[in-house]
Length: 379
Image (tube, rainbow, N blue to C red; front, side, top):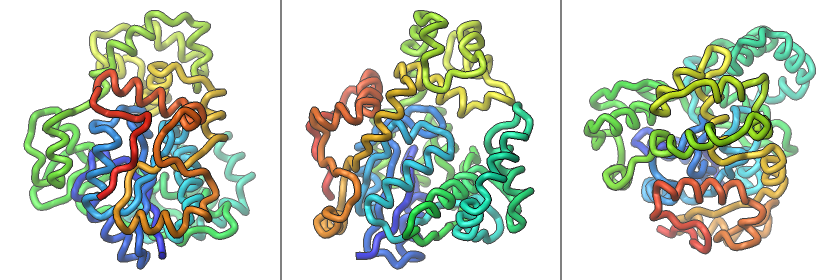
C-alpha cells in the first residue's frame, strides 16, 4: 500500500484542506493518506479552536485515512523543530511520499534544496548567526537561502516551512518523495472570505469569532463543531494572567525558551485581556508567534528537560483511522520504527506527560474531551 504523508493542524478543517487531501492522493498516487496532526495547542502558540478528536473526525470524514498526533514537544515549536518532529513521525510510519502546501509562486525543487542543505549546513548556520539579532526567524532564513541557494526566489510563511520539511527529509537514507502543492485562492494568513474561493484558517477563525457565517468554507462536520464550541486564547487568559502574577522572576527563568531577559518584559506589562497584553509585549524582534509560544509554555509551566524527555520518548499516538487506514496499520505496524499507542494508558501518559498536561489544561475550557483510555476514532 503506497502512502502519502501530510502535516496538518486543521484549525479548523476547511474546504481547502479537503482539496489538499484530494490532490495529495492524486499527485502521489497513494492508496492511503496519513496525517500527522498537532494536538490541542498549535505551532504558533495558540489553543486549537476545536479539540483534536473533533478535528480528527472531520479529517477522516473528508478523505484522510489515518491521523497520528504530533506531540506538544514538537507541535508548539518554531518551523525547524515542528518539521523535525513531523517528518520523524512520517518516516516512522513508513510513508512513501510527503505532500505539503506552499505559498511559493514559482516551482521549487524541495528535494534538491534538502540535499543542498546537507552539503552546506556549516555555511548556512554561520550566515544565519551573522545576521542582525533583531531579525525574525523567517527573515533570517529568507536572507540565508537567497544568498546561498541560487535557485531560491520568494519565501512566504509556508515556503519556509516547506524548506524545513525538505532538509529534515533529506537526512534519512530513504527520503520520502516530495510533492509541493501551490496554495489555491487565499494565502496562508489572508483574513478575507471571498465567495466561491477557499478561505484560510485564519480568515475562518476571525469570521467565527465575529459571528459571521462560514458554512460556504467548511464541511458540515466542522460547521457542527464550531456551533458547539469555539476555543481561543481569551478563554485561557485568567489562567495565564495568574501564572504571570504568581511566578517569581526565578521561576519564569526556568520556563522553556525564556531568554534575553524576556521575563522582565512579560511581568512588567499589565492588561485586561490576552490580546491587549500581546500587543504590549510583542515587538519586531519578538514576533507574535514567538511570544505566543512562550506564553503557552508559561501557561503549562514547561521546562526544557520536559521537552527533551518527551522528544526522546517519541511514540505514534493513533487518533483515528478509516477502513483503509486500519488496513495500513495492520499491514505495516510491525515495520514502524516507533511504538504505537492505540490509547493513552499510564505508561504512555508518563512518556508523553507534556501532551497529557496540555490536554488537561485544554479541558479546563473544553471539558467534554477525554484522553486517558480513549480509543481511536473509526469511520
